[in-house]
Amino acid sequence: MGSWIVSLEGTPAGDIAALALVMLSAISHAVFGVIFKGGADPYLNRGAINVVYALMALPVALFALPMPTHAMWGVLAVSFVVHLAYELFQARAFSKGAFTLVYPVARGTGPLATSLLAFAVFSEVLRPAQWLGLMLLSGAIFGLAVVNYRSFPGDSAATRGVSAAIFAAVATGIMSAVFMNVDAHGTRMATDPFTFIAWFFILGAFGTPVFAVFRWRYLARAGRALPSLRALALRGLIGALVAYLTFGSMLVATRLAKLGEIAALRETSIAFAAVFGVIFFRERLDRPKLLLIALICAGAIVVQLG
Image 1: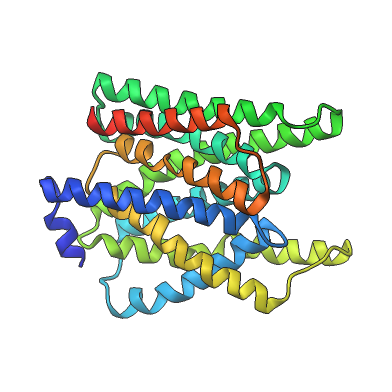
Image 2: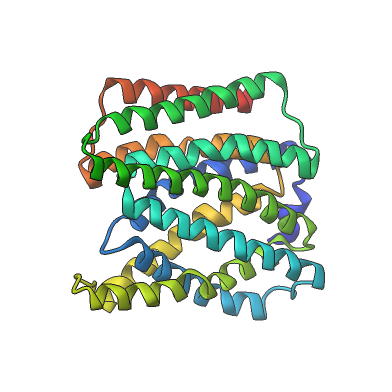
């Protein structure tokens, strides 16, 4: 499988495969956000997800794939730290703010930062039309966040909570840009890209799950409601399967396409997230939001066609 992915590099079939993978990642990322945000607590959710997908990846990494080289272990170590920061910022954002507020802020920050870092790290250059589409996409995403922000109460306590959520969401977007460049380097340097991907998932068990244990103890001492282990395990299993779709397909796509194009097209997840926010969290979706979502999709199309 890995050798087939490598054979697609630089070919028209590779471009089509990258497009399909990124769209799969976009849809599944919105689903992943719902799983992460829902339930008893985002920290517990993410910890359960990481444990399950690490256990699923372990036998594949040990028995079906070549071991990472020394250089790849270094990249995996950096990736682990960056992803841990990303997951903790994302958990804080989801615990402090509404899904339709923090998700657009995080996703809007990512594409611009990813494209700038890709230029610095890989010398990847987008065409002027693609930059125009990227600005349209990110501007519309931030516009969506502003519209959602205005719908919140104006009292000081609510404002402080929203401000904390926005700060964490911006940090989430920046970390996503960093990890896309780090992980792209890892998948591109590997003889078999699935070696990097498998160990990326395995190392995830040593990050957020540790914080989830402390979070569980904190909630228990505070007398907060805790989910049953069975419910948490089920959420972890479903989340792990979705994580393989969203992060796995994105990592494979980084081997086949420019990071700026991937980051822009992946942000069509905003459209799916808006629909899921209405369905699962009873958040409003009015005409201005629909217009901004349309502009987000238009920006992603311009980047792709540019």
